[in-house]
Image (cartoon, rainbow, N blue to C red; front, side, top):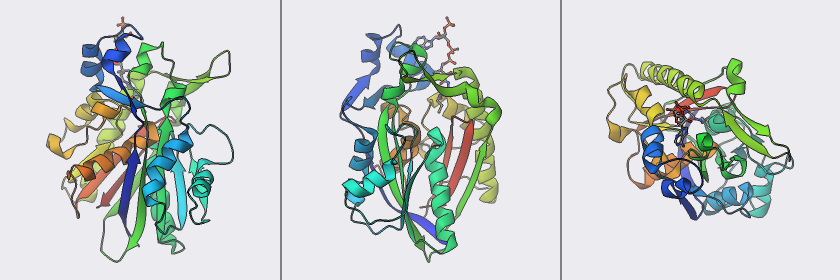
Length: 305
Ligand code: COA
C-alpha cells in the first residue's frame, strides 16, 4: 500500500523558559548552553497542564477528521491506565476507533509511524492518527544542570493516509538494549521519577546510529540525498556531527530545537509542523526522520510528503 502524511498539527505551551532564566536556577551560562546544545529557549507546561492537555491541544484542529486508529507515543502519561489515546477520543468526541499508547521514549513517534504504515498495509485501516507528546518538565530535576537545560514540553500529531499515488515509505528500527541504563528515569526518596543520563554515551550512540540511518536512506534513494531531514531534536552538535559526513545543505535540516529544546516523542512532529508552516517542505519531497532515545532505541522513517 502507498501511504502519505495528509494532516499535521502541533501545540506548544505558553511559557517560554530562556537560557537566561536557567542561569538564575543552576550554575550555568547562556553561552555554555548555546555552544554545547544549540538550544536558546524551550516551552514549559504549567504544573496544572497535563500530558493529556498538551495532546488535546495538538489534536483539536483534526478532531473532525475520519480516522481508523489512534496511536499516542509518550513516556510521560500521568496515569498507568487508561491510556492517553482513549482519553483523547473521549474528551474530543472522536470516533470510537482502536486507540493505544506506545512508550519508546524519544523514538516513539517514528515507531508510531511504522505501526500506522503496517496497519494500512494490512488493508484493515486507511487513516491512522499518530500523536507524539511529552511533558519532560515533570521529570526534570531543576537543580541538575546536566539535564535541565536540554528539555521542553509539547505535542505534535499527523494523520497517515492510504493513497493511490506511488509514494516512498520505508522504516528502519532497532534497540541497543546493552545501553538501556544510560538514559532512564530514577525515583527519588518521594517516589518522583527524574531523568538521569550519561550524556557523553548518549551523544556517541546518537551520532553512530544517526550516521548509519542517513546512509541507509541514501541507499534506499539510490544514492540521492533526502530533500529534508528531521533528526530528533536533542542537541545541535549531535545533528551537525551526523551530517558532517554528508554533503547536506543546512537549510535541508530541521533545527527546531533552537526554540523548542528536546521535547522527546513530540520533537519530530513538532519539527515537521514547523517545517510545513515555514514552507521548508513541499509536496513530493522525500523526508527522512531519525530518532533515538531511551532503550537505547533508534529508528528512522523515510517518506514522501
Ligand atoms: N552549564 C555549565 N556547565 C555544564 C552544564 C551546564 N548546563 N552541564 C554540564 N556542564 C559541565 C559539566 O559539569 C562538565 O564540567 P567538568 O568538566 O568540570 O566536569 C563540563 O560542563 C563538560 O561536561 P561534558 O559532559 O563534557 O559536556 P558535553 O560537551 O558532553 O555536553 C551534554 C553535555 C549533556 C549537553 C551532551 O553530552 C549531550 O547533549 N548529550 C546527549 C544528551 C541527550 O541528547 N539526551 C537525550 C537523548 S533523547
